[in-house]
Image (spheres, helix red, strand yellow):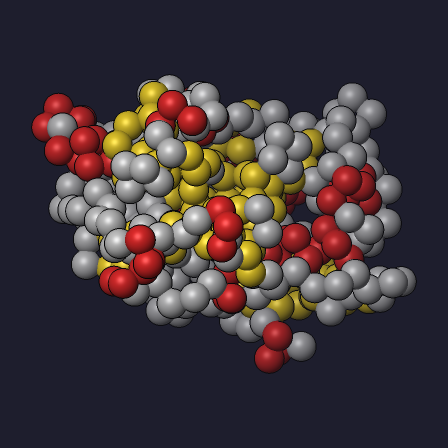
Length: 383
C-alpha cells in the first residue's frame, strides 16, 4: 500500500509573511465562545480584522491567516497555548499546520519538528534546498483521523445516500481519439466505468534535472496494459495545467499552489471532469459507506491474493498500480489509485485508493509527480 512520502520546504517569494499578528482581545477566539459551523462554506469572511481568529467545521480547526497578499482560512491539525501542547510531529504529518494561541503563531511540521512558519521562511539554508512551498487550505478542507480522511471541496458537498442506489450502465465516446468507454450511473452521479486511456503528452514532465517527453504512461511501458488498465497520469496532466481544453485547471502544476475553478475538466473528455475529493466521498456514501466501498467498487477479477471485489455497482475498479517519480512501476494487482482535482499542498494532491485486502475505500494525498489512474465524472449540466 502506498505510504505518503513528503519532502518539505518553502518558497519565500510565494509565502512571504506567515507570522500571525494579534488583533486584540475582542477578535481572539476563546474556548467559551468557540465558533462551530456545518461546512467550509459557512466559515465567516476571513478579513484583516479577524487574522488570528479560530473557527471550526465540526471538530476541524481553521485559523484566519495572512499568506503573502492574501488573507484566508487555513486548516490546522492542532491548537494549543504553546507548541509544546501540539501532538507529536511525525513523518506522516509533514506540511500539516498547528496554531499557538498564546504566541499567535502558525507552526508547520517539518522533519519531525514543529517549526514556526516565519522561522522556516527566514532560514536561508532551507530556502536554498527548497523545491516547493507549503499550501494553506484554499479550495479543499480535510478532516483527518487514524482510519480515514474526509475531504470536502468548496465546489460541492457530500450528499445523502440514495437508497436503493439507482445503477444504469451505458457507453460514451471520447471525440478526441474515438475511444469508447463503459459508463455507470450510481445514484445521481455518472462515472466512467473504465479508466481513461487518452494519450496525453502535451505537458513537459519536470523531474529533478531532466524533462521527460510524457506525462502519462502505460504500466511498465507496455501498451497492452493501457488497453487493460488505461493510462497513468501525473496530477499536472490530469488537471490539464496548460489549459488545452479548459481554463479551470490552468496553472495547477507541481511546486505551485493551485486555485482551480470547479468543475475541472482536466484531461477528461468534453462534458466530463476530474472528480473532487467530495465527489468521491459522495460515491462512498451512495454505495453504502466508506467502510465497505472498496469491496463493492472493485472488479470481480484481476486482484491478487483473493482481493477481488463484488463489483456490485458496475464501477469495475481494476488494480492498475502506479508509477513513482523516478519512473518505477509498482502495485499492479494490489492497488487502484484515482486522482481527484482537490489539492493538498503545492506538491501533493488528494486521490482515492482501493487496496486488495481492504473493504474500506480511502482518500489520501500524494506526490503530484506520481502516475495514477483517472476516472472521469459526468458534468451535472450534461446529465
